[in-house]
Length: 338
Ligand code: NDP
Image (cartoon, rainbow, N blue to C red; front, top):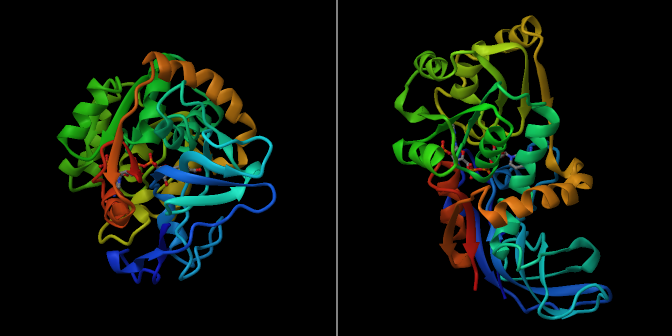
């Protein structure tokens, strides 16, 4: 089997040198374990955090350890009564062609519902994150206005489509004209603004304001930085900000966040009576069944659409990951391993 390990921690920006491809024997499943040949592996922004040893909500990947990732594939051997060869399963197999985990840590994937790769995106952790954040912390009401950035990614595209289904005005923010077109034409956003077209938060704010004539009720926070600075003053009283991610700050970037002072931020939260909820999706898996029952049929029928960006081969995972951090992906970034 092949795997990619963390060769070194990034000094500032992550680079290809931080990763190393290794070959290892295919593991033999022990008692209660299941061996899976991984077909698709997920690349997600949170992995940048695992490369660093800064204090966080999850432990870092040790130097020399296999990079963390969810994957979906076919069971090839099983010592667990719930799994037999030929079944499909999702698990945290890492950046690797094979994974061996206790059956209790796997989730069975139904290949007749949708292509198995969707277990990594629209019907997996990112789609579920959008659904929880929107419903539980966005507390949407028909007629309101929602803004979300990274609008064509798996989280943002789920949020935008749920907002439209719930009768809200959905304004996306994405990098580049092509992604903005995808946001409106494929995902049904009412409007989408290219954040790269504006150097200053003030100019970006004017563009967002013109698409949000009634102000912003829900700002689904995916990116932080310039976008947050642009949107915050546009919030309506009693607005909600589900704080999901802040990818513009995952890697140091000159100029990002300048002017967004903590006093300005906290004062806006106070004087506009905003609800700001940080959430990490692993605390919400008790609702995963409910999510699949609601969203699964909508994906199967095409009512909820999704986009995947497929890199080929484990050896290309590091480059695809670094590109995604800079917005190079169009849709959920996955890696096809077989
Ligand atoms: P995406 O597939 O959307 O990929 C990340 C996107 O972020 C890029 O394509 C790019 O889109 C955008 N981006 C990168 N840098 C910037 C920047 N400086 N300013 C604005 N946008 C930028 O990612 P996901 O949908 O998987 O994740 C979206 C967010 O949700 C991330 O912050 C992630 O960490 C977070 N998340 C949080 C979870 C939780 O439990 N709280 C769980 C899952 C995800 P573009 O080119 O359009 O700008």
